[in-house]
Amino acid sequence: MEEFRPPDELCDLWLGSQGPPEDAAAITQQVLMAAKRYGANLRRFDDMWIAVTIVLLPILFVAGGLDPAAYLADAFMIAALLFYLAVYWILYRKAPSEPDSADSPMREHLAYWLDYLRRRARFHRVSVWGSVFALGAAGSWLRTAGSNPVNLWMAGLFLLSAVFGLLATRYELRKMEVRRANVQRILDDLGSEPEPSV
Amino acid sequence: VDPRCEDGSRTERFRELIAIYAAAVRRLCVVYASNPADREDLFQEVFLAVWKALPAFRGEASERTWLYRIAHNVALTWKARDRRHRGEPLDGSCSPACDPPDPRRIALIEIIALLPPVDRQLVTLWLEGLTMAEIEQITGMRAGTVAVRLTRIRRQLSEANYGRIPTA
Image (cartoon, rainbow over all chains, first blue to last red; front, side, top):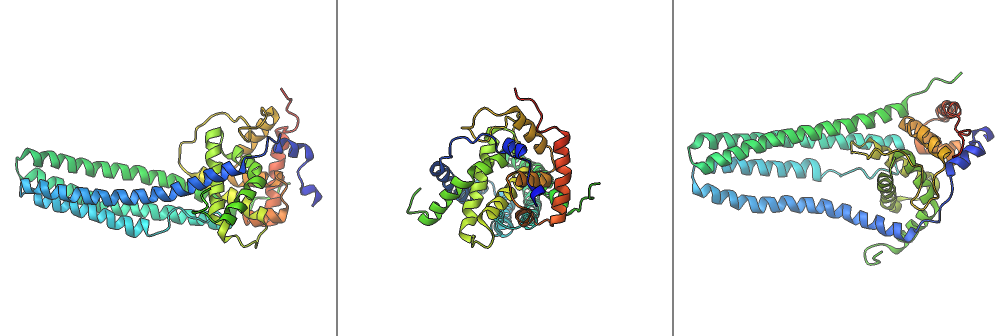
């Protein structure tokens, strides 16, 4: 086992000069603040969705009151919003967020991450199709419902939102695919048996 | 630390862990992140994971093995994220308070940083002085595999003259 130890020269180089001792109290403070921020950010995101729903629904009903033709479009828009919220809660928020598996064996931790990324991608795929369909339908209906300028303006807004939703999801999915491939590569490397050196 | 919010003994234990392992975690961060801001980000993420995992630590593995496992797991997934890592040249300093870095140390870190992630983990654990059994526990790899990989890495380090690069 003696030969397993790294040469002293290399060890010294690696360990380098020891700076002054770390301020453990300050680091503890920073980490605990980060832990609180992490939870707070999740709660803030949830609150944002609730606020959007509360604010948007009455606005849509008021806007619909201006022109009865807009009611159907409003219904589509509300369906899109509620569908997204349902998917968010069922597929995303109810499932664990980033895996707290850092103390698991490396292979398990990476497998958790792959599963987490798969769930995230599923959430994006499912949520975007329902929402984009409803937004697109709302926009198309308003476009054909008449020449009311408010309707035409809203039609453009809905259709643009649908396109934006598709592009944003495509971007997110591509990002997630890169991450998934990176984690999978490490997992494969971990499981590979190298050829013994000659 | 707000004592109303945090369990005092957990905080105290956490503070001890930082005092013991902060330098080792900083060295680990150096081979995963090339600039001080990313390093600090990774350093905090490692200890955030330690904080979260601390209540579940039952002492089945040694504290050192447990903490290195967390640090390496976090570093691996941190690196795998598709975030924009600020690509600056390595400066080799492990902490903001360190002395000016040794050019030979920078060269060594550059070589290690170019290795594939699993090899990078093995070599840093080896350089930290962990035993074969501890490395097995952390990585979940068999001793034979670890030995073969480390032999290959050592040859790479030797070929790069890690110990004979002249000082400035």
